[in-house]
Length: 255
Image (tube, rainbow, N blue to C red; front, side):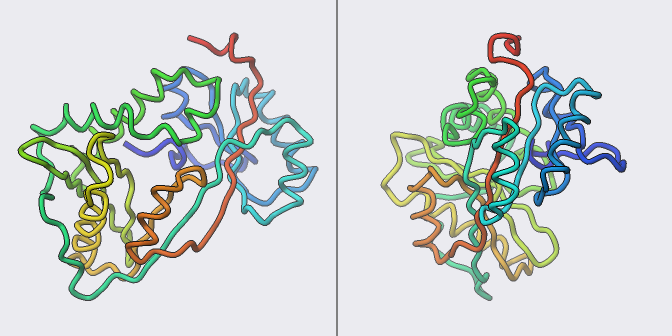
């Protein structure tokens, strides 16, 4: 399953693109602005495209330092939903070794993974946006981790305590970069080194596959995650802003 922020329709020359996966999952017509740097003209063009294509919600991801785009977007009804933090680090040649209690996920882990995922990602922009019903947000991450577990292009690792699954991390390799996708630890298992062990397992997997750079994205409001990644040697490389522009009210957009 492709994550909502990266799903792609067929290419065209429009200023925006429809996101089929997001639209089908949330049962709303959802699109994303193609470019992250916008002038007033570009914003007006995007809004016109949305009107012509009956879009309910338009996403915009822009560089946090682009004050002109931010000002133009906010003048036209875009609302800030998330500060997107990207962190990177080099992958050590031999990889870290502190991954005790972590193993590769199996099909038998899916239900436990879904249970953790449905409550673990509440810092995301989807939960912040009142137009998205909370139960659909829960289902989004449950479906996402299930697909990652079943998808051979992703590596999913799980952490266990006394035969109980308490956390997971997903890894995808793209060229020389290893990307941590989803990571979560059950609420009653936090503060016990589980997160660090999962990150170490992810880095070891990346090293074994020849990745040179490790990358992870988290939310600006998720201070605990940022501290974990920083403790694991990651440093912030980029700050972006997620905006949503709705053309319906929360009441009219409810299923």
